[in-house]
Image (tube, rainbow, N blue to C red):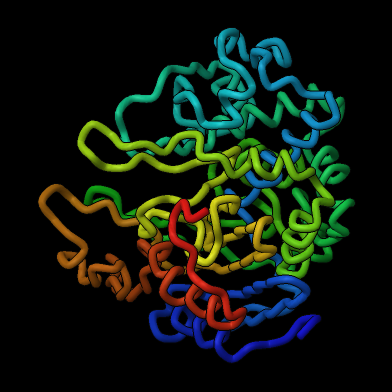
Amino acid sequence: MSGSSMDTTLLNGLRFFTRETVILEGVSAACGAGNRTVSAMDGAVREDSVFDLASVTKLFTGLCAMKLKEEGLLDPGRPVFSYDSRFRFLKDTTVWDLMTFAVTVRTPVRLDGCTDRESAMEALFASTAAPHEDVRRIYSDIPAMILKYVLEAAAGMSFMDCARKLVLEPAGMSETWSAVPPERRKDCQCYDREHRIENGQQILREGWKPGVPHDPKAAVLQGDTGDLCGHAGLFSTRGDMVRFCRAVLERKIVGEESLREMAVNRTGRKRTNGAWTQFLGIQCYVRHPDQYYSEIPCYMGKQAFGIGGFTGNHVSVDPEHDVFAVFLGNRVLNRLTVLVPEEGKTLADYGLNPDGTGFFRWNDGEVIPSSVKYVHQKDEHFHKSVAETLQLSLIAFNEE
């Protein structure tokens, strides 16, 4: 079968999120293998819905870096400082270090605590780098935030123009923006009234505006100016993200060697306590030996890479097996998105199920659906339906 079709199996998988648990306000998804594409959607979404891609933006950052490397415009072995002297404390940190999450990069103050663009940029330019400590979590937004400025210097244009030239145009993507056109803001998913509980404190984030990134760091740095950040800030539709995946698989964006480089595990290892660190490639996730912690579905192989986005998204591609998956959801609108329990407490003490699903009564009496830990539901309810729809076999980790 070729072309695109609505599939009952895929739709039923999505309904777990929108109906059985109400984790998501809405979701639009697609998957493909070979020349077949299947799509489905449920909840408060339309064909023309515009989603905040959040950290899925990093795929564009990584691919732009690899393309500029292919073209001889970017030398990843050079220090960051040599591309942008404002990063005065990164004279011994290479571009490759940032591309591959090889170091821990910190800013002197939290960027999401900055009240204006100028103070946030000042803090970012004061970033420092150090070797990783023995911790599980290595992933960070800051390397991609810095890469934006490196890529702009290497390409001689704004990062959005770079992404448009190197990714959007080759892929035929006309519905992906850093500044959503005014006439399309009505199509943006609403990410307002996000509820969080952190160490017993109830936090309500409201006042979101269409076209402004949900990510607070991107919101303060980018806002609605269109000055794309490297870690988050792109908005897109399902149709465009399918075109993106197809272009990657067809080698329209970067070549074979660059795709292989994207998917090489750069960070995953056993820690001293026997646990695994995160398995990361070039601004993306790669296969993890423990599927519970893997952003890459188990029907994709060792050359697959992908990433999720906080707002409710996932994109993964397997160039070797010609397979892709796109999941664009909204887990923010009037949802409990984060729960950091007080010491000695568990999710059950807040009335939630062990998997994070359930409902929580807010301090004003409103009952709020939970999307806490939703990422761990994708394998059983989204990726399982993708595998069944496309008749894909599971691939063991590191299977040759």
